[in-house]
Amino acid sequence: MTQEQSPTQAPQASRPASPPAIEIVGVERRFGSGDALVRAVDGVDLSIQRGEVVALLGPNGAGKTTLVDMVLGLSEPDRGAVRVLGAAPRAAVARSTLSAVLQTGGLLADLTVRETVEVIASFHGAGQRVADVLERADLTAIAGRRVSKCSGGEQQRVKFALALLPDPDVLILDEPTAGMDVTARRKFWDAMREDAASGRTIVFATHYLEEAEQFAGRTVVMNHGRIVADGATATLRASLGGRTLTATLPAGADALLAELRADVTVSELSASAGRVTLRAAHSDAVAARLLAAGASDLEIAAPTLETAFTALTED
Ligand SMILES: Nc1ncnc2c1ncn2[C@@H]1O[C@H](COP(=O)(O)OP(=O)(O)OP(=O)(O)O)[C@@H](O)[C@H]1O
Image (tube, rainbow, N blue to C red; front, side, top):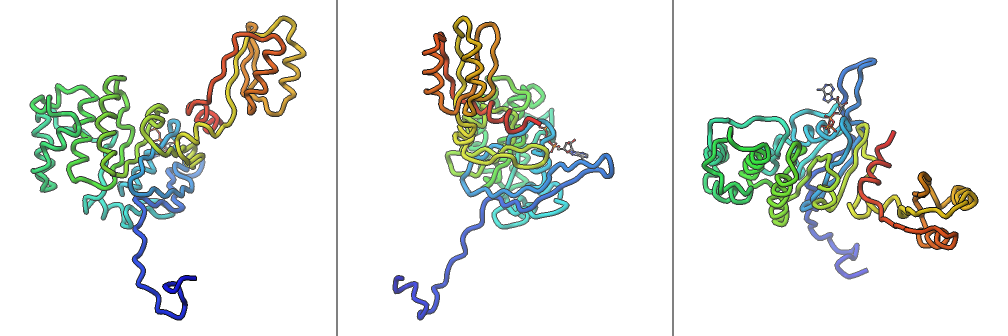
């Protein structure tokens, strides 16, 4: 024990640890009743630290939007609590520490992109940030264009610019690239990536697994209102363990297939048109067995996030 920690000395005034960016404890949210009861969020605990970029993944109806709405203070949990930087969500929005890009919510079609940003900036007293957020959202070149003439992807970037106006510590995006084509999505995430590098905490709900893979350090998977996986995106991808092997079978491979089916380290085996596909926990050993038995054209693939996601959200 060091002298500073000695119990005979008065304890040093300890600074309280800074609260997480988002703290969700035991949150539940239901809709309807009786047979029509939907447990949209069914007991979620989640802590997100400052500076994390987190993807919230899940199939349709998993509860992502319901959870995001509670984090933003747009609706209240039936049970549990949500804190954003230690405060109630509405207080965080009022203090401009929290802002969002939502799926819903329109823009005024007759205004230009710059006018739209200027009007909202005036509400936030952020007139001096207009040029900066237009640049960050990659809108400078189309700042004079009417919103009605902007593509869906450009309109989403306008919403992104608006969300950046208060310079929030925490930014929430609910499926920000829904409906965008590949080029528009890439442009959107290029703008986002630069922004994330500045240390903002970013949480985004998405259906696109590749967006989680490319952009989020951490991925939280929801299904039926619950979190079914939460971890580093790379770890999650590898979490299924094993690799997928595909090979052309030699003639008369029934004994080999029976042997592989009986192996507990081999799963998801299927054989058709002379090709076998399987998942192997010990891929090198299974590859050696296949080749020794005369199999050819062997392919070995690491699991994708999609495989992990499908396995986690299959009923
Ligand atoms: N206002 C509401 N009234 C009744 N049910 C609702 C309401 N809002 C959401 N739900 C239901 O709660 C469940 C979760 O919906 P939610 O929109 O949160 O899912 P999601 O993961 O965001 O889905 P998506 O990816 O399709 O947007 C769904 O079964 C949905 O039908």
